[in-house]
Image 1 (cartoon, rainbow, N blue to C red):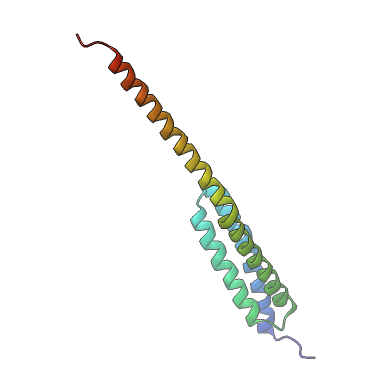
Image 2: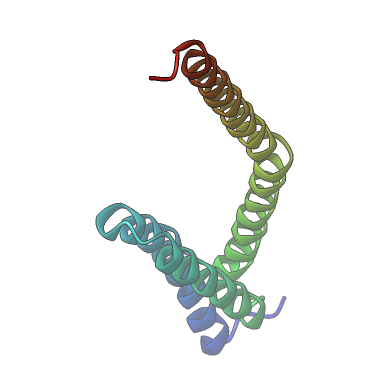
Amino acid sequence: MNEPSSDDRLFGVLAVVLLCVALLGSAWIAAVYSKEEAALSFGTVGILLALVFGIAGWRHKAAKVTVGMTGVVLILLLLGWLILTTIIVPKKLAAIRARQEARRTEMERKQAEMERRGAEQPAP
């Protein structure tokens, strides 16, 4: 069986480190600085680099584990995105529209009541 070369070992370890830094660093950026865009960008670049280095060092065990973990993370992100866009966001939009409609009808009712009161008062 072929032993992994030193380059494969380097790429494997680098892939593991990049994956850990991407996952933990993006969570830290989002928590400390409240900048979701920066955290998303940092995490995405880190995960993609971990995947690239994992594929480059495929013969090393750490690289294979990193590619598998990266695949799991990407699948979970895809499932989260699907749930968010198909279930959660439409429900929130429907609730917002219902509140706006209720406010609009309440304003129309108050305006009609004010017009009625103005019509009932005799002109001086």
